[in-house]
Length: 258
Ligand code: NAP
Image 1: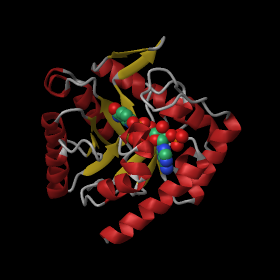
Image 2: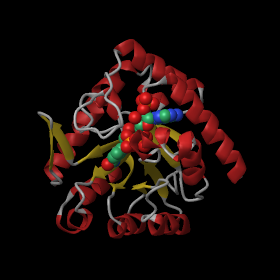
Image 3: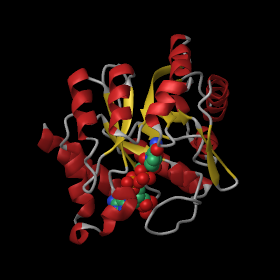
Image 4: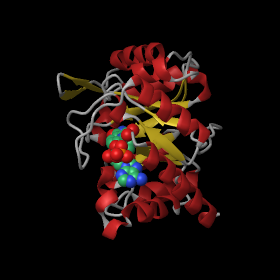
């Protein structure tokens, strides 16, 4: 992951779907998997070589379930977030230093960890305002100095925000997919500065499954993983067949890129 010294699998597991099925933008509705299904998904992921998991306080009870259902939370590189709170079917945002500290304390307890590997500010969309007017990033830097987190950054929604994060933080989470490449300058800058890049929405939030005449998933992996800047692509799936296929495709495109 950039110059953090943290080693992540090129495919990471997204976990919105373990804790939340309201206000999510997937092609079809889904039932949140039960405990046995989550355990199965986690152990299959590990068997297939995935060591990286993405969660957030805004993903319902995703963090809590991961802490309970991972056989050993220390076996994973865990990335979580601060700033977005999802309650009663709605998101609100708090980027204050106080909320940032409380949020990390809650995440540590829920995830059953003494430290968190990577923490990102969960942008509301107004990246530059959060960066320039709010205290969340400065507070994450302090928590890193205290050893409670190993690396930090932001899940951005703008090119300007992404570029700032790449210059000043360890990791950026950016969008890159077959239909949206506007954040390419962020990826290029990250490659130049050797910063971590985590890709979100690489499968078009699931619409890749029906795009490009049925070839959308294959083309998506090729598109994202042929980018030298990308440290890891987070894909959310609760379907073990999709998980297996995604690992096969990721391996195929990495070996081509190599
Ligand atoms: P995505 O990874 O682009 O797509 C997930 C969807 O793709 C799910 O509906 C999944 O359905 C489907 N899928 C996965 N593999 C498939 C395959 N082989 N064939 C067909 N369909 C497949 O979606 P995303 O949730 O937008 O992004 C992924 C992760 O990024 C999230 O889980 C979350 O961790 C993170 N994220 C972060 C932010 C942020 O602001 N930080 C925003 C969005 C997402 P099945 O379960 O049926 O496989």
